[in-house]
Length: 355
Image (cartoon, rainbow, N blue to C red; front, side):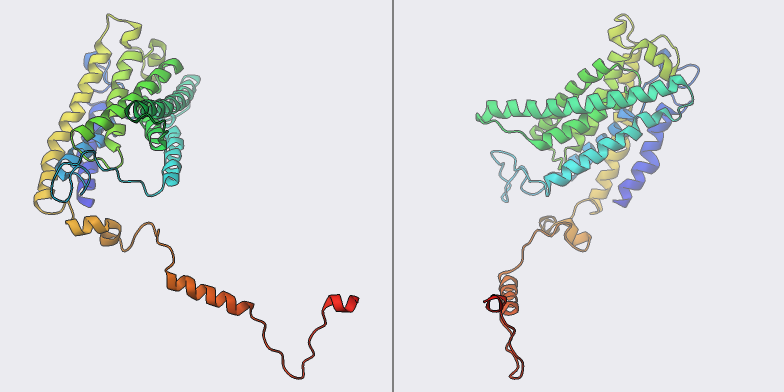
């Protein structure tokens, strides 16, 4: 944990952040001579934050390999269908998703950094609106698309709450880059495609036999790519002016002859993928060679909560039969009438007094 956390936060993220958000970055939108005349527009980090983390997760999952029993049985034979490990608690999953969703209102509108004028106030307000629309739309799209795919495959109609939750997170990631420069109707479309993007990447990883336990790669990497590309399509001129200043390059849908912003967004995506892969691939291979990356099979089956963290995170075991029997005996003894002393007169029943 500590090794890759230090590597990621100390060497990978700083370079990506500097290149895109610093006024001295080579692909930034905040210097006097930006790349392609506009620079990369990533307002709150679809690329800088989410793609970087998602690409790291992709490299890690590939080097680490799948969990025991995910794609192959104990003898190494390919399973007819990949085994699905159920979540510990869907209720906690939903709670965690909504905590993240609420936090995103600090993430996206908060990237305005200050509300010092009507213009900056408009930017922050727009960010809140587009964030809400994209997340809700993506959640519904992912869940109902998965339902239709399941119905076509099995003939049964089932609604997967996990799809809705990950779809919401995918929508949040998708809108993060363009939350300040797209209109509400564009956020709706971005959310729909964000839900489909999540499902596509999730299915692709299974086909490639890359085991992502929580679908972090589809949410952060896949939807992060889409979020960056969406800016090159939907960035509205007047909104770009408020958020970044006038530079004359906007979304393709507003000027089909101007592809500068779209091209810059693509270059930014490729730069992030290249830098993260170049640094983290050899790093994870070194960890693996040193035996620091994956636990042995016994520890994996027992669970890392027990082997590394002094106990299970969830105590799902019920009382033993001996404990239940002991409790029942204790309860029955408390109900027994205690014998009275010889000199003590028994209390009269209220019914007898009435009689």
